Amino acid sequence: MIDTTILHISPTDPDPEAIRQSAEVLRRGGLVAFPTETVYGLGADVLNLDAVRKVFEAKGRPPDNPLIVHIATSKQLDDIVDEIPEQGKLLANAFWPGPLTLVMKRTILISDLVTANLDTVAVRMPNHPVPLAMIQALGEGIVGPSANLSGRPSPTTGQHVYDDLRGRVDLILDAGPTAIGLESTVVDVTVEPPTILRLGGLTKERIEELIGTVGVGAGRGFEKRSPGTRHRHYAPRAKVFLAKSGDADAFAALLQVQRQLGKKVGCIVNSPLLAKLESGDYYRVLPSSLDILARHLFRTLRELDGLGLDVIIVEGVEEQGLGATIMDRLRRAAEV
Ligand code: TXA
Ligand code: MG
Image 1 (cartoon, rainbow, N blue to C red):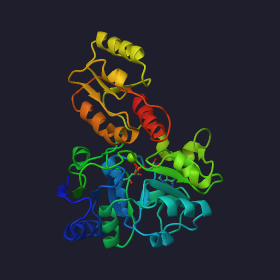
Image 2 (tube, rainbow, N blue to C red):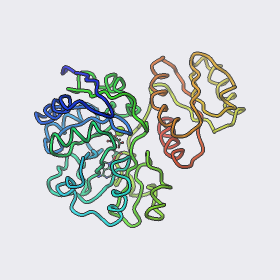
Image 3 (tube, rainbow, N blue to C red):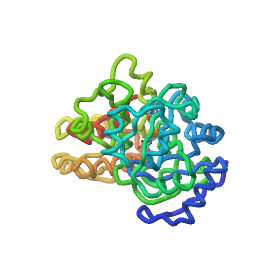
Image 4 (tube, protein in one colour):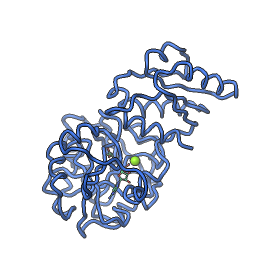
């Protein structure tokens, strides 16, 4: 067990002294949880292998699931990736800093531990003043998986990080709730056409507007290229059922069956039809606007899960734009 310190920090104008302190913790091999525009990350100096090892330990993360390297300037890419494919450059120019992670060929400076023995490395420049300043102060990249226990929903507040990682992380920089609430989109640009390995905060549609049709990972060989998809994810302790968007009859039937089985049931709905259906202590209505829904989704899953429910029924959304990412996360949460 280590002493976990929580430091509140402004998301727009971070206190330089707090930044200096957090870079110091990283420099001596400690772990710092930090906010980003997507979800909170668990940071360690990418070149300090003891620290990187501690990240896997703290999260209980399987060693075959590689980490994203976070950078603050494009210059820092030189030490991390061997070459930046043309389409990678286009994407980075358009969407960095932002919720986009690019998978590229790695240099020998990047350890096998970070990449889980792959010959590629995932890199992202977060759109948040706190990690940008911290990485600048450290002077090199940091690894940054989501700061949750492996398998749990990603943390969107400092409190979530504390709930999962208390005693396992030196410092939590708490800058309030994150803006997007879902993780970054992971795109492999070493292949033609580039392929989305994980849907995320940047939509497929916006990527395709810029570089044309991209692949979306699935099928044979994919799990090897995107190890994260192999593992159980985003799962609350309660059993999650995914209900079809806007289908009040099916929803009511599912709810009734679970209640008849004696289950303590919570619900997360978003369409006006289902919002009207019922209320009660365990009924949460989210806005149907996708970006606002995304921002509150993991928080609401965690909140309901904290109430000791047996079952959480979540209404789905249309699978477009951010809706595709939301459905991806809900399906994984509902996997047994
Ligand atoms: O928004 C985010 O991406 C957050 C914040 C903190 O930046 N980070 C995050 O990291 O979600 P993590 O470790 O929870 O998810 C990283 C994903 C995993 O699915 C992992 O398998 C994949 O990226 N990944 C990492 N390196 C890879 C590589 N070289 N090739 C393919 N996939 C890789
Ligand atoms: Mg994660």
